[in-house]
Length: 537
Image (cartoon, rainbow, N blue to C red; front, side):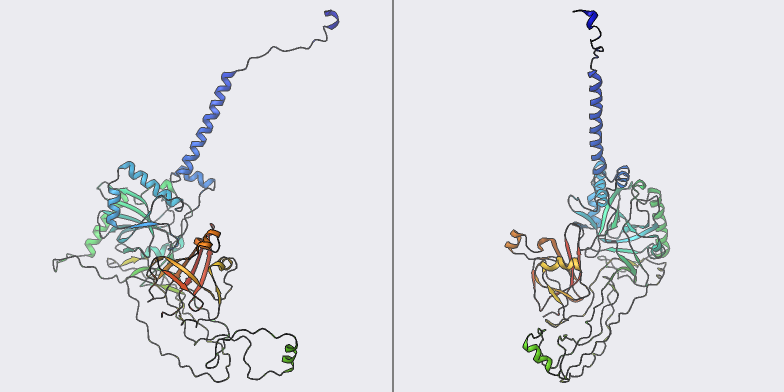
């Protein structure tokens, strides 16, 4: 080869470099460790929202919802424990076991009880307020009040009862939650869930409970009302319990001085079993709004022995021409008569207040209005307008200094409304369980809607029952109808006995339920609120 001729045609190739396998190995290991740490960190953050740093990160990522308000008939499944049962449960736990139980209790509350293993512990019993103070930015709940209470039945259990609320109702709450006030938590009316348990140095147990209903309250000796509100956020850095060691000790010392001043030496009258204390003169009761009964517009009174008339279709063809030629009779009745009931004064008020300890006042007997016999020619007369007596909302009267006999309760008793004999209720639209989803989408539209069908009783209370539609086997296989995704909550007037749990209830067009509201949840669950308007047989 002649290098003189082809020396300029040769390509230049740089020297070949060796691959650094060690550096690539280290980089891959670092990336693998970073991915593994991120995976573990996600589990740490999402599975432990009760930790302050995890809760703060989840809030910034918008992956956590604020605590929500529950309904009495749609609350998480739980068990109702007395003061002695609560003490026996937590006093036998070691430090590690108690810390694990507290983490689970707080985690369930933060998650709105969506992923609960087991039953939620609810508090029942009687407790006396030792001290009440306002919640601040340094507490877990930043707005409202908290009451330190002592169990009446068991002196070894203390309870912090939290009352979250907006700042504007704090003056009324301070007047109501006084030292010596008795709190009565009942199974049928209250859902105060335990969210923390603490073992004190002297061996006692102190629990922290919050009411999941967040209801409205008033005092029996005053007209002021305040409403609890779920907290928008939690300040978990504040730590548990809400009453720290020094604050709790000082509160108990002040309570001992208070008891020494208010109660003098007592001389025992007789030796025997403990006598049940008399009912308190003043109580804090829950207030629920009641919907007034709407009367039909411009009803007509049918003549004697008149049967229910149905709307007749307009004649067509030659018959229509003949009808036009005829002059209308002066005594003709309207084409669409309305069934009229005897007018009576409504008994519902804008607020329904119920108390389990104070008996309701005896009703004042009023003379029944005299109804003149209907003439042969019926003339439509509008009924008198239903006027509801409003309950004024005024500042509450201060609780007396000697509040040892005062009780605090949260009750929801039966209301009272007009009932009708079978088939004599006002005209309305009759629907079945398969039509409830259409009612939920379009609403009641200001008309009366009645519900009929067969139902199974899942839960029965003093004045309320929860029913499920009874579906056939073919409907279950073909997924027809509302099925198990429909819950019917029935309210009964005072004096009615709800059906027993497990019974079957059949309601037809003569004895239907009156629908007051239909709510559809995000998961497709239908909550149908109805009430009993039929008189017992």
